[in-house]
Each structure stands twice: as C-alpha cells, then as structure tokens.
Length: 318
Image (cartoon, rainbow, N blue to C red; front, side, top):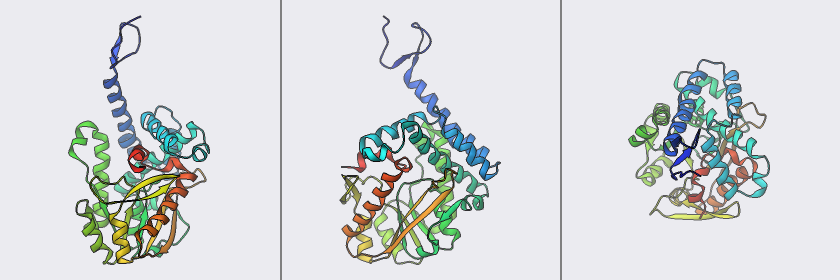
C-alpha cells in the first residue's frame, strides 16, 4: 500500500504521481483547442458536406469533450424522465450531444469567414420563416442554433436579441473558449447592429423592442436570476422556475409570438431543421408559460441530448 494524497492520481507506477488538478486543466485546454480552434478552423477550408462528415466521426470519439458530455449525461439521467433517456444508450446519447456542440462552433467559424450561405443552405424549413415577421420568436438553448440570427436577418426580418459579452476572467482560465465567445459576440453585433443589446436593464429594453418593427428572439429556459421575480410551471413532471419579466411584458403588450426550435435533422446528416409553432397571442403570462413549457417538454422527451444547458438543470428545476 502507498499513501496517495486525495488531490493526486497514480499514473504510471506507485512512486510516480501526477496532480489531478493539473491533469484536468491540461485535458480541458486540449479539448478546448480542438473544439474551439483546430476543428472549426479546418472546417472553413472544407466543403460543407465533408466538414459535417468530419464532425460526425469526431463525435463518436469517446475522449473528445469527455468530461462535459459525461456531466451532461449524468444530469440528464438525474432530471430527465426514464422514457426520454431510454431512447438511446449512453454512447449514442453522448455522440448526439457532441454533434450539437461541434456543429454550433463550426457554423460560427463558417459565418465569420464569409461562408454564411453554406450554413443557411443546410437548414430545412417546415414553415416559411416570413411567418415570424414582426413577431416574437421564443426559443430555448437547443440544438446547433447559433445561425438563428443570421437566418432571421437574411430573411429581412430584422432580428433583435439580448446577449452577454464574454467575461475577461474567462481569458485566463480558458483562452480558446474565450476566443469562441468573442467571435460569437462580434457575430451578433455585426448581424444585428444596434438591435444587439447587452444584458442589463433587460425589461425596459424588451418593452421598447416590442413596440418596434422587427422580430425579437428570446430564450426562455435560462435559470432564473437571483432576486428577480419568477414564475413556475411543470416540465417533465418537475416544477421549473422561469424569469417572470418577459412573460409579463409580452402579456401586457399582447404581442404575437411563435415558438421555434432549430434542431439537428433526424436523418443523421448533421443538417438542421427549423420548427415554428404559432402565431399565438395572450394577455395572460401563465397561459404563455404553459404553452412554452409544453413546447420545451416535447423536445426534451424526443431528443434530450440536444438541450444545451444540462449543466444548469439543478438551477432550472426547483
């Protein structure tokens, strides 16, 4: 028997230890380098179909994004219904989750380096996007959806969106991830110009935007902010907590809205499919929330690996 400090891990032999914290940091930086720089950078120079094929192969690699996919799987098993998780085994579920993550970053790089048409050409529409003109598009952290705003802008619908710029402290801990966040923020501003609004005083900004022409895009499934009013509704037989600000404003304005989801296409091609439900209108915030919760639940039951924020499930469900 050999004494093994809790922060160390036996690697090669009983007399050689490697700090677990350092090993985790190296692994994370390597995964970030591949995920946020090398693979999407290479994809810029490849035909779209070939880059999608590359991502599909990489998603089946157990070591790539292992820690994050493991954490997402554990949370899905904890909070999701047995029926939803039982639709696929662990390996397939994690591969699906990785496909979403890899494709999202690849799409951002293609749009950043002048290949927006290639990204938009991969989207199939169930309902004409023009249906959402001057209406609110209410979505969720779902699927490879970073191209949503570019798609809406290309259709002439003048999108607006609240976003959070990257925090400087992220640069020191995860520089490659910070690069991705910076590119994403730049993409948002270039796509929406003055209608790209930083978070802070969101209620007043949303209220003004609802009175203006253009399509406002909102994500409703983010964990509630501390100290802010909340409202609740069941999702997957558990009580979920939502920020109450936007549903209240929407009800007061009686603005028409649509639920949307940009998902991986079910044919396995890593193409995307846009779903638009509506339009709806209501002067009651709870009625809106019930409809949204049902829309979210429907997708979580059908393909839970496409939900992007399983890491925040403990905050989302009460």
